[in-house]
Image 1 (cartoon, one colour):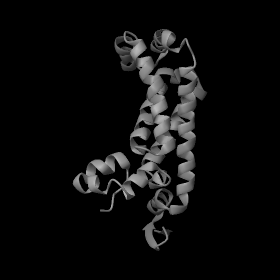
Image 2 (cartoon, one colour):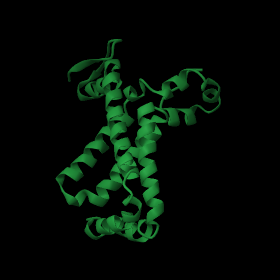
Image 3 (cartoon, one colour):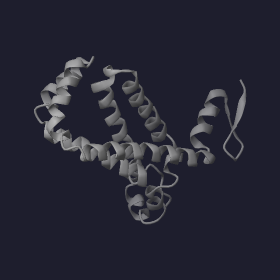
Image 4 (cartoon, one colour):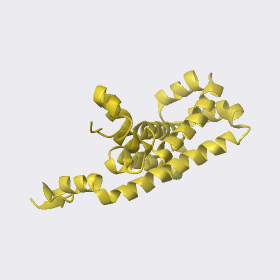
Amino acid sequence: MTENAVGTVGARAPGALGRIKWAFAERRNEVMMTGLRWAIALEWMNSAWGKMNNPRFVSGFAATNANFAKNTQFGWYKDFLTGTVIPNSSTWAYLTMYGEMLVGVSLLLGLLTNVGLVGSLFFNMNFYLAAGYSGGSTAGVNLMMLSMGGALLFSRGATWFTLDRWLAEHPMRGLASKHPRLTRVFIGRKVVV
């Protein structure tokens, strides 16, 4: 079994485990992960902006989802679309439009980064289930964004240049001492008190 150096302190971990720890914990990956987070944020904001500027988005949401329900390969998702989304289409249209913008702003600023990443994963999974049948590019883009969001969610480097980090290091020390687990879930970092 070979060993690889992990990090800058000279810790060693065997084989593939060492490479995984290196990829997700190394300081020099922070810039790359921040860039990836910003790219995903801009994609969500662009998508939301396009929906907000389309006057037919809300009125056509029911018809679009009816088409998705007719063609989706997942029976349970078809039931969800026909039973929940289509009867309340205007509510779901606004939730989609503003939810995408909130996810994008969250990831761009790094404010509640983990919550934004979970929202991103949720949207991509729904878009894949609804429209993944329509072609390789639609399925591929959603699966690619799912995998990038998952990598960011489990990477400490995604919180390098964020408001979360600033909050964790400054004003949230009092909250972190009272509720450390809750703070770690929302901020994604352990706060030193």
